[in-house]
Amino acid sequence: MVGLRDDLRLALDRVAFARALGLEPDSWQEDLLRSDADRVLLNCSRQSGKSTISAIIALHRALYHPGSLVLALAPALRQSQELFGKIAGFYRDLGRPVAPQGERKLSLELENGSRIITLPGSEKTIRGFSGVGLLLVDEASRVADELYFAVRPMLAVSGGSLMMLTTPYGKRGVFFEEWTSGHGWERYEVPASECPRISEEFLEEERAALPSWVYRQEYECSFEETEDQVFTTSMIERAVSSEVTPLFGVG
Ligand SMILES: Nc1ncnc2c1ncn2[C@@H]1O[C@H](COP(=O)(O)OP(=O)(O)OP(=O)(O)O)[C@@H](O)[C@H]1O
Ligand SMILES: [Mg+2]
Image (cartoon, rainbow, N blue to C red; front, top):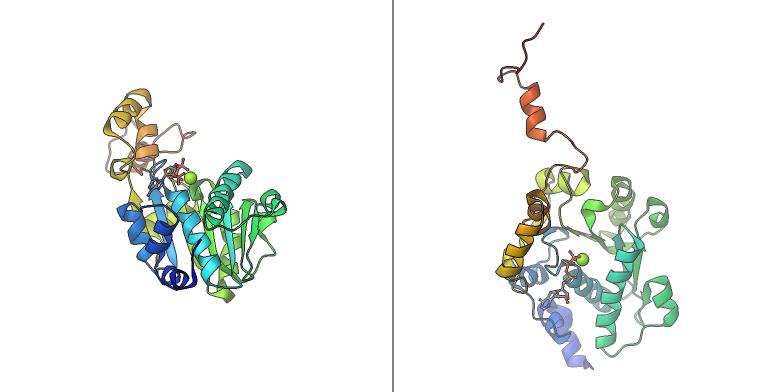
């Protein structure tokens, strides 16, 4: 159980908060916890710990900013449930119970009036929330663009923070656009090789088992050509470039 003096310390220091929850942050996680950026993009390997660290950030926000609304989106119900499970798990670790009703609704209501609501992402579910203090988008590269366009205005009045975290999923969509050319973001790129829990042996096995583009996408933070795209972007660029002689004579 965390006492009052500890509470003050943990309010000011998210790294200490993570440690109090039993998590020793990896170095990029520590950088993120120490950052006060309010626009953050995480392009991370599978299993690197992105959902876990975002759950800690969500809980910290709700606990130490009374009355705040934290929304956590994921593309599908299963992913929302998983994220909610992590948040609720850490909350329990602090010795605080989660109401069964909240568990069903994937929402946590704190004594200080803060709420954490986890939602499977569809544009319709999200409209109607306002005053959002922190918006998390998990698996952001698989979330529909319309959803992103629907949620951005919610941050306008509240001056809320936005964090999008994902493993890449093709050269398409809002996350890809923002990662490659958006302004005002703090960016974190975390390949599997930087994750202390993923061994070189495991990665070798995966490299052998998977098509190479899948390996690069899942473990090396690489935006690969879209799966259903038959021609690669560079093939198309070559085809339309005037500097390249056409394979077949024109006319
Ligand atoms: N700093 C850490 N120390 C120890 N374990 C950690 C740390 N960060 C994450 N983990 C553990 O690593 C595993 C993967 O974490 P998490 O689910 O957050 O990763 P992810 O990047 O969201 O994975 P996925 O791509 O599958 O969604 C979990 O078991 C989590 O508890
Ligand atoms: Mg995850």
